[in-house]
Amino acid sequence: MDRYLVSELVPPFLFGVGAFTSIGVSIDVVFELIRKIVESGLPLTIAIQVFFLKMSGFIVYAFPMSTLLATLMTYSRLSSESELIALRGCGVSVYRMVLTAVMLSLVVTGLSFLFNEQLVPAANYQASQILDKALKSDQPAIVKRQNLFYPEYQKVKQEEGVKKKVLTRLFYADEFDGKQMKGLTILDRSQEGVNQIVVAESGEWNPGQNVWDFYNGTIYLVASDSSYRNIVRFERQQLKLPRTALDLAQKSRDYGEMNIAQALEQLEIERLGGDEQKIRKLQVRIQQKISLPFVCVVFGLVGAAMGTIPQRTGRGTSFGISVIVIFTYYLLWFISGAMGEAGVLSPFMAAWLSNFIGLVIGLNLLSRVAQR
Image 1 (cartoon, helix red, strand yellow):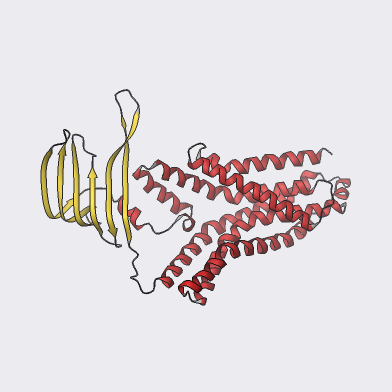
Image 2: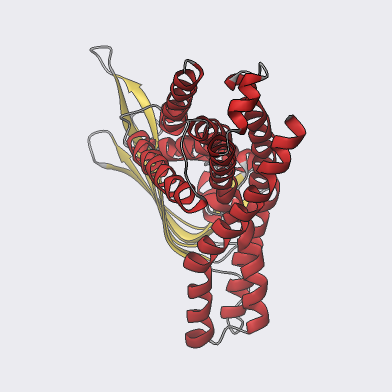
């Protein structure tokens, strides 16, 4: 029975992967590449290379959709042709019939997780690098970043015992060329009783001594009563400040180009900065990266449970129902994610809430079918 069900599930699953991937790539990638070919003169060979690199990301999203389509189409056909009734007549329970789809969904979950961790981040990063190099071939290889702003906070206990987040250091640079910061202004309030303002023409990180080397600037020391205590002009000055601003400036990958390990490293950097909104957003994204592959199990259970309901539906109807379920699920997924970023839900609940709701619905449907 398991071999028969798997043989029936695999063809529509592969069809779904191809169909959903093609739709996603066509909408999000193809039109954008065509525009770049026409407007920016992007070479066709580069466009084809970027197209295939970007495809892996859409395959990951197609896996759960295809799982839902395959289970719904297969079990609906078996139900309409009374094959499920025959299996139940032989003593096979509905739970046992659906178990095959769930186990196959677990395999797809593992495959999706492998793709999402090992293949997709590297492919997206390579695609963006190739695209940038092709469109900026006449510019310097180092991409400059401008208007770098990095605040650092810490929680200070007030007299009434309540902890309050206060700004301890503010780092600003007009430009970063890949090695040096230029046009630096640093406000340092980390030492009690004195504030320090550093203005420098340029600065760079000294990895040998783990300090910053600043050039051609001035240090203003301000007392707690807002009076100047001292003014120091320098041609070269070393200051022991965190290198977090440099780490943020050198960060060239966005979320879609990082795996979980890289995202956790970025989270540690963001925690040093103390920006709660960025920290919360990254925490939600990490949890979503873990929860997304398990959508395959949820969709496999829901599709199989809906398919076992006695009915007569064609492939077109199954496809339409799949689209409705997918749209509803991802709408809830995006809403809960936004609530997590806003602090209404915890990062864990924001990423897993839609999975839990889908799991409850699938188990409820399966229980009702089994009782008939």
